[in-house]
Length: 360
Image (cartoon, rainbow, N blue to C red):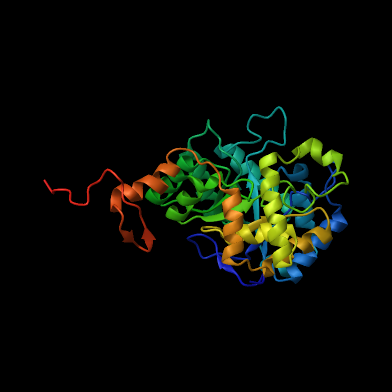
């Protein structure tokens, strides 16, 4: 599936590439990101391959990432309307201003205006709530976002890192009130972080939200840099930020390396291909600090894993999910169908339910 084999994002009319280019690494402001020239080279590479989906946020390198994207398209104005640019609000860039961040009306409007200025555009295609504002009524957030949509400054609304119950509440209110609905949900998801399968991904599938995984390489743990067989040291500065893989992580990494060798692909490409193959996943967020890293990640679009390879990765990475996920997945079908096969799913009979039970 090439980058220009587009998908429809959630229950909307927006068509995007299956890999979305994340820009959290754009800018060297924090001492570890990509230079402006390298960031622009990555934009060139992604767009030249047919990609059309770019993700940024007001907080990425304190606004510099947005400015890099804005300057890039300002010099290539003919390409602006052909791409989907999303940015996020919530994070406060102005210490001392209690309304500088969050999801209240004043905060949302001023953050949007600031992002539009840095992006040098008069609209964003998706405006993402970056996190949950516990102290602002969700009705206020949804109404403010709907006003931005009606004003033409925002095309679509998305949520990121929001609890499943709060996202479900918001989507229900949006539909009931006739407000701009949420079309997609960003969440962390990888071979080393699958707990979203308990509530978030099923909720998104039920409510028509396109799932957009971030961190599919788990801070580089699944990139091929970390291995029991590797003897040279990994960047100590990076370890100080993200830590090191646990013993369980290494078990998954070992299996990933084996599947990658069998598939003739890099571990990073296999990890990305696995994420993109998961139920409910729409577009996967990828990023890089260097052009060669981005090329390696983009090559994952051509990796097709066999059912056996997917099953091997599934088995070693299966998480323990919060109640009632496992109860609903295993016990509920047994109690409901008592050994029958329904919709292609076979169930086991509950031992203490008699086959000759009398219907009272």
